[in-house]
Length: 445
Image (tube, rainbow, N blue to C red):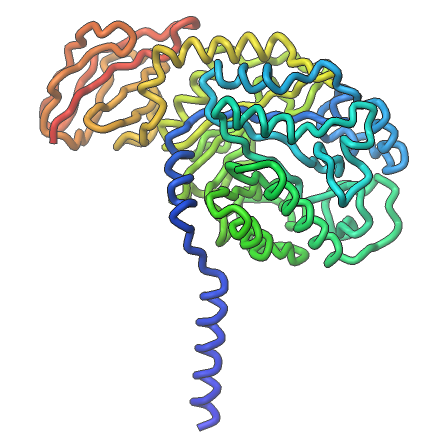
């Protein structure tokens, strides 16, 4: 009897544990996911006091700058050339549908007037609330605003820096209470989701700081300390049910997350060594830099060409995902011309090729050596990014007929054959100025 009772208790415990971990998105959240999936293109903005040294956003960690010395940057951060209207207009003109703004990075600086930290924009010579200005302008121009929020903190004593993998050289010696840090984050997230209108999503980063050595063999639950993520996720969804949650932890999505991101790689690739996670059923996002840096870097001139940026966007869409393209503005609030030029170029390109990107899903074939497929309704978009030696072969073609075939750019007819389950498309020639030759196939079931 005792053995049977014990079994029942264990089963009940397992059931309750599973129930606690399960997550059913709200109708508002499901609708937001669909919008996100259709949006395809967003702007990432890495900007803050870390921009002042001109050495990227990890400068505090990389140079082992102490909290005391790093705090002095607060008095130098006076972005008098920041113009929210110009920033949002630039993103909108580039064809971007949403903006993900850094609100607090690993250095612990808050870009809004928070009640829970003295290290914030309110204590700089500038004083004005950056998040408020961006939120108001995004709402005005119809661009959704997502907020990046760092889970790790190189500054606070109550962050478990003694178990973390980074920020060991910032001079902290006092061990505060981890529970206080969790409450601090909840308080700040409540501010962000209460005082700035509708927020499209929260973009978390830094979870990996409390994980064991990053490798493709690492277990998904291999963490050194309890992040209380589900409590935090539930708080966000309670405050704004539509708000999407993503976490840049490079592993299988956790319960409560609404989209999955891939850093410096399109889903399914891992050229950077950071995106070894498998593609999930959630909406997907590639985050990538225009040069080699996230934050402003004086010496980084390795800017991607327009053709490389198009390939990132197209390959992301071909995997059913979005591209979140990053800029690192200068400390004064000015966006450097190399970023502006490329964003304007992308905006012009999308005026022609947007139908093959926006509101599409991944085609029936996984990305190929020559390019990718996207699809919207009865139109299959064949994105040819690389010239092949021969014709393009679409094997195992799942549709009965191709009723029309033409170039998206000009509407000129393309001679396509369908025989023995393979569609054959004549070779196309991408160029540096026209890097994606898109053939549209109108199909019939």
